[in-house]
Length: 98
Image 1 (tube, one colour):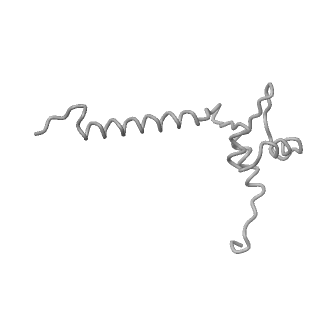
Image 2 (image 1 turned 45 degrees about the horizontal axis):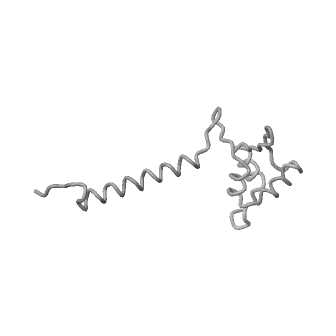
Image 3 (image 1 turned 60 degrees about the vertical axis):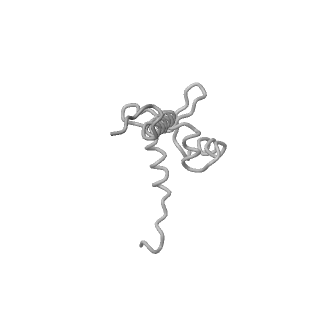
């Protein structure tokens, strides 16, 4: 039976994998948006990336009442459920599905 030490290929590989998992967890925690009373709130950047829109377009949508939002001290937030409702309300079924 071979002795394993810190230079063994199996141990080195294990620690590399653990480092990768740890980094993946760190990245996931950075992107995590906390929930408040079961509702997830999204920032301008979140919604912009989600819908592939510029933040200027989002501002136009807010100004024209297209999208609901919350503004506190200059910080704009959107309820995730409101964004989903907006998408659903503009859903167009294809003629092939009818």
